[in-house]
Length: 164
Image (cartoon, rainbow, N blue to C red):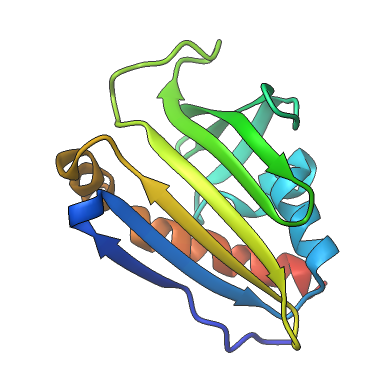
């Protein structure tokens, strides 16, 4: 089953935000689970040939997800996601930042303030992600490092998982 769904990413430099929209041909509970279950996140979150590996995840308000992105040569980049608000099958608000393997924040890359919203549609599920930054320079740094291409690839991976 191939998907004709397209990832759309637009920049709002005045508001220091990126907007990501993506539809999936899968029911809302399945898409929600793929965004909230670390064993599923590990299967799609990283753009190939990279892969994601969860070190720990406590999916609750005040909890965090600590994971690494592992490159083809075994290089690792760690990231932590702090969950600020969760409305089951509706939205997740979090702050993502790069860190060391113990979850201590680093200044390598800017913080990203995520709000992911999920909605059932006639053909599946629509996901809208708004990512805010402290400054336009921070937004540009993330774009320059290939965020748009990488996240588009990751969402394509999710399509493959949902089609199984």
